[in-house]
Image (cartoon, rainbow, N blue to C red; front, side, top):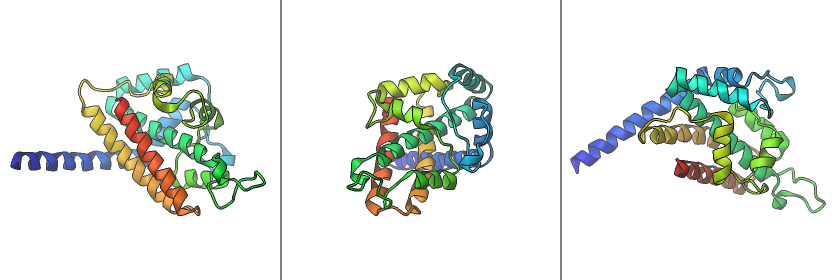
Length: 218
């Protein structure tokens, strides 16, 4: 029993160290890696946030693979952060297009999540936008090509994500820590939004469910 308690305590300590590393990476290096891999400029109409348009996937994949060879841990963390942000982008757009959130005349109900509030959330979080093309392609609710699981395989291959996975379950533990950090940031951002509490719960519950399903894949 003591061994189990000590082992659990050790895992918790390792998790806290990894989560601190992820926080440090997000503050210092993530935007730099994103800018380098995607070779995209900051769009003024997005208030300085990167807006990732589709295209030149072969170059993106090649750069990601090169970064994975040069620094496997850093690129694995980049992949996990990028994947969580992309997953969040898809689920937020699903939320915005729910019929229940529209007024009877067909116009979006301003009480709920809308595009203006979505952009404000990105600005608050400091996360990039991904454009509509990828949502139309991989939306879990409105697309024929779902995020889980064939769509997830295609996304990983398209961008060259997770190529620095290790030969044991260590990478999965690291991914759990990455997702914990990202969920905490998303939770803080969503709770500050001017939308009904029911929609906040829906967004956060869906984010948790989606991240758990991604972990199941690995």
